[in-house]
Image (cartoon, rainbow, N blue to C red):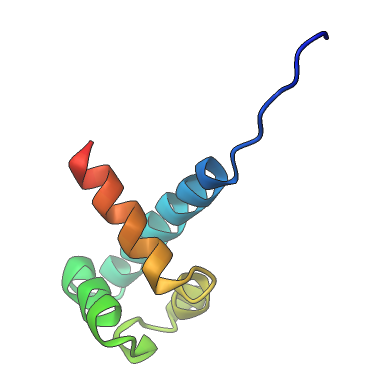
Length: 79
């Protein structure tokens, strides 16, 4: 190996954000909620009460900063 490999933390953050959002959405749907409405409520207000604690969904979404989630969502949308 003669070249330096670049490590991009943003790629890991994006992959983690995507995984968390999908998992939380799935859990909210299992619980009978409309995942998009609940996640938007959380992102807009900052109130984690919008996310059910069912199977740790609330704890999972709280592992990622709301601003980072918004950046990820916007980046995905604008691709």
